[in-house]
Amino acid sequence: MGRIAVVTGGSRGIGAAISKALMAEGYTVAATYGGNESAASAFTEETGIRTYKWSVADYDACKAGIAGIEADLDGPVEVLVNNAGITRDAMFHKMTPEQWREVIDTNLTGVFNMTHVVWPGMRERKFGRVVNISSINGQKGQAGQANYSAAKAGDLGFTKSLAQEGARAGITVNAICPGYIATEMVKAIDEKVLNERIIPQIPVGRLGEPEEIARCVTFLASDDAGFITGSTITANGAQFFV
Ligand code: NDP
Image: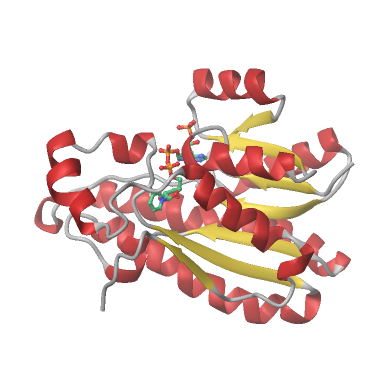
């Protein structure tokens, strides 16, 4: 049996591509999800990958969920991909405390929760791989996404700090900052806005594919990437920003 890899939000979008790519590399994959039952069961039917439902924003649920996965799959979680994420966009003057909180709780505290649960075991075994899916908007900011950009920028600080703490324990912690990737999150954007305003900003002239992010994850999870830690892979089709 291959190393056990947990992908949060692993049954849809970028996460589904990551789960499948890890499985193809020989990992035993568990995909978590937040509530979309039909997507999760369709995903399990298609791939055979087990899915587990809980909110990453709930620390106790993360603890119980990881214990359940380790019991089911009969081994420790050695690879964690923190991919689950949400948007609750609004211009700041209209953003509600609830919109702020939901995004911070899922996209930033969720990363703390999941990592905090698997970290002691990784330290004991002297091996671990943590990959955090941040965003271009955590690097450059985005009007209408103060909550999302703050959480995703927080994920980058978390990644760099934890990389230093895990270095001597054989744990690597890295981030990926995707640009616009063709998932439901992006397809939900008005088509006119997508075609007239967003795609023209991407020098390669297209959205990225989920599989293009998944391949970054499989590399960072591999033994070959053992010296890469605290780094950020920017995968955005040459969208430059200062
Ligand atoms: P999707 O909306 O397609 O999927 C999000 C996944 O996260 C779903 O599986 C969802 O579960 C899960 N999820 C959401 N909230 C929770 C929660 N509280 N607990 C557990 N799981 C949860 O998103 P994408 O695939 O587009 O995005 C994946 C990641 O990549 C996100 O972190 C996003 O911010 C980031 N990203 C995406 C970009 C893009 O262009 N798409 C660009 C840059 C970054 P369920 O299926 O049950 O709803």
